[in-house]
Length: 204
Image (cartoon, rainbow, N blue to C red):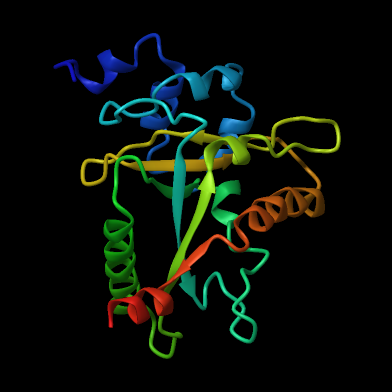
């Protein structure tokens, strides 16, 4: 890693510049969808802290929480489980750079923080498990006209160099069609969730 300032590092890299400028924007994906150089982004780095752009062969881990992402009666993922992909970006861990156990522990910690900050009477959040997605499979999801639906970006953080974001890059004005695109992502994750309950059973 070089000693350049973030502004200097971003010069000539529209992907890095975008994610630096929009770091605190909870609706950044809408701006990403209309960026004139969007299709270059997945070949470029999105963070000065990143080990490099996300390769197609990488596995990505998504923390799944009860009751936020899961149907309580069936244990299935909710259609809205991956809604973050359409607004602030859907956080995942790159398994190549973070052990699965670390992702579990980070998920427990996130649930504790959410519960500590929750309003009185709000349902308690617990970690349900980790969904595993292959980057190549995420990028292969396409719309009816064969347009790529999602991009994967190496948005490494100071406390997690393995952090990445899955973003819905297809600009769809129709809300129903947009939900349909995200449902493909949910379908891709079905059957791939490593459950907390199974992990605890194995530890006995």
